Length: 367
Image (cartoon, rainbow, N blue to C red; front, side, top):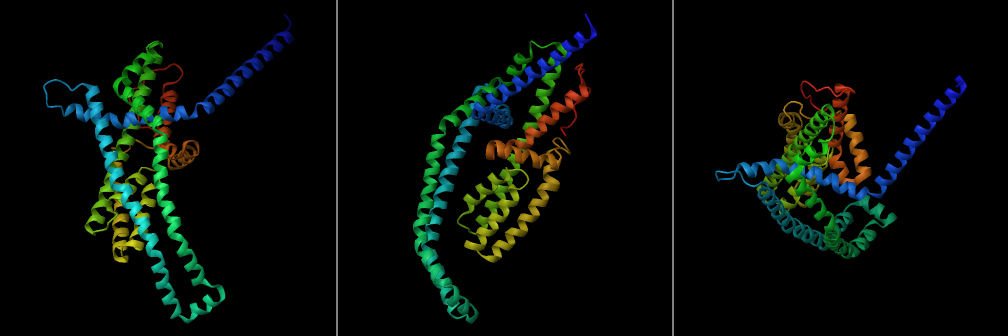
């Protein structure tokens, strides 16, 4: 066979292989787009299982009997505790918010009248008011605002209905998380059992490291969120503020959002105190919050991560959060950093071990 024929065949083979893998990539992209919701459910179930695994282990160790508590019973107990906490939050958070929104709607006309009285005694404002009719427009808006806010309050009810409409998704995620908690390790063992020995060991090592990274991230951030919520509740309850529980829950939830969540939560409480509390309480809260934020970021968080058990470059973290939020909304933002850390573990293992799959001497922190 001539050299030019061999070269033509080689080029044709390369082109065919490239076309094949391009087609595979397109098919995978189409499959992901059509199963996006299902993949979100699976990802949420995996992270939920990893988040609840320490609690399940704690319940098992707290079993007073001589033998070990059945794992299925420990999982059910954790689920019941979580359900009870959810019912408590719904009963304690939504009614005060609805009540305050409706109360604010009825108070606003009085606020506008107070503003008009002040404006009538201020010559500079009178000139502006005569030119632009500011108080007249404010009175008109205040008169229509109660109906708007009342409908806005009823929006919370429709939001609750929307949650019920997604009950199937919640049941699916909880069911998947239940079986992952029950047989997660066995699934990994069976899934990697048919691989060659060196690849099997590396795959199981990657799975173990990813699980540890995600559990560390989720557990630490849940603990910090609870701490921030308790701090908020303690301060507001001591001040006698009527929205102590709803604001504490809001702070705990926002603290789960990476990078900016705690800052947004702190200044939200500051704004609420300015409007519905007192300037003195707001300033004291702001000082307390800034001190706690620095303490959490510089002392508590590094200590809980044991000096670097989870390290993600800030630039990578920002990009991961943006991409995650675009792909899956709040859920994507919440899972962005542990996902980036998990990818770092995979890359670290593959690069360090090489193509041959040699065993690592010692696991290193995810970067």
